[in-house]
Image 1 (cartoon, rainbow, N blue to C red):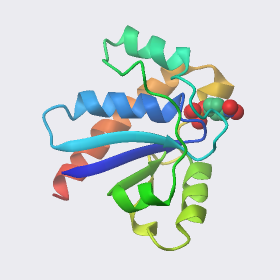
Image 2: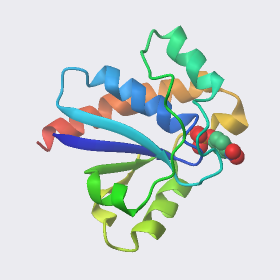
Image 3: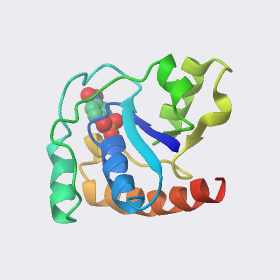
Image 4: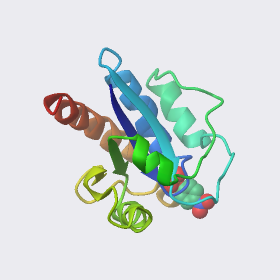
Length: 144
Ligand code: 4NP
């Protein structure tokens, strides 16, 4: 079973969106999906209401109990794919990895996913996340 972890700055907007969209997209595939934050800023906080609104709009099921959790070294060890939502997330992940798990760390999509915490545009986030998850699923299954 492949283990995938999506990572953003706060783990309340983009990476939980990717987590639950991927769970939907990969529902017939043997893939475990979680998400984490690079920071501890939102630790314990629930998924942002803008991301929850997207789940409702697109009938995506999600866990209401999901709360922000900061990534640590044991996660880098455990997951097979550690996917940063933007370039800064990838840089922070590489800093934590310090060469040990660099081959598992990747950027979600070229150019990154703009942060809706700042843009307010959760529909833009969803369009990028949906396409990106479909592309990643293909890639992950092809590497099986
Ligand atoms: P996310 O968005 O990284 O997509 O979860 C953010 C959430 C919180 C903050 C920044 C970005 N913050 O500054 O607390």
